[in-house]
View (cartoon, rainbow, N blue to C red):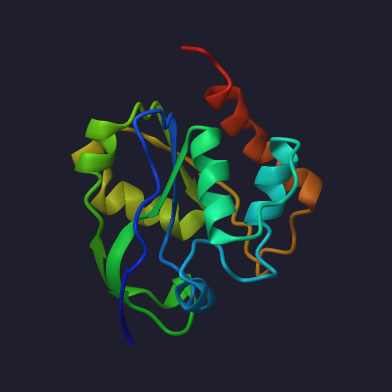
Length: 165
């Protein structure tokens, strides 16, 4: 099924890191926000990293990201995908990150999961010239990693955003 990305990127001029998923899941498209599936651990992990309550509304999530200088988007603008299975992606078309990188203060790009990393390297690196650091997926399908493992991996985001440089 052809899916077109409908979520706007979240960023501002203070954003220091850009986190890129692959493509919004069926549930994320339904709730019109990133990492929208209730079993996805993205928001649990980030709120633990920043020692804050988990943001619940889309507005609270947006404010959380911007307050912590985090930009959020996805690698792909469109693709053929079955349900939310990254492994089924065919005919990928990458997003254009030019405006985000021009307006923001992005120092580091993180990709969430193997497929996002693979697609970023193949379709986006030539444009951005910024190497991506792969973070483990927070999807419930990636249950082999504990919350502690995810926390330990995602803490590097805070190291960057809290740095004054």
